[in-house]
Image (cartoon, rainbow, N blue to C red):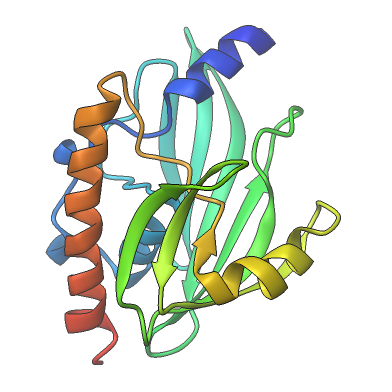
Length: 194
């Protein structure tokens, strides 16, 4: 697959409109955490040129692949595993020849989660997980763990959100914000109380 097609597809990615996604009531705890952290809902249809599939339910693994005709090339995986009453271990990895994702392993505790919002910093778009306790455990990029652990985590900044994205970005952003509020309420009201 051509690099330009890959970049174009990733720019449009990853999963289609959150309005096409499933209810949080029908999702596992790991799926709700995956939506909060990465903006991905494996139940939503992927845009043309991409596919998602789940090679494993425990731990939850969502694989992302480029599709061209009958060929499919996996480019990344997200694995999310529940580690406590309200805490999760998340791993984002590159699985293809091209390093597309900022790979790393993280722990996230949602016990004191208040809100999740999308925002911008000087250098990138971020998610603000207000109240969550985040820690980078490993990263293939020099300084990524140090930055998250000492600078970003105390401010609630999470730089690893991938989706959802589609052509109608303004409408998608409003739907995503509403869905993030639903996901926070579900995490606090149904998952963290167990």
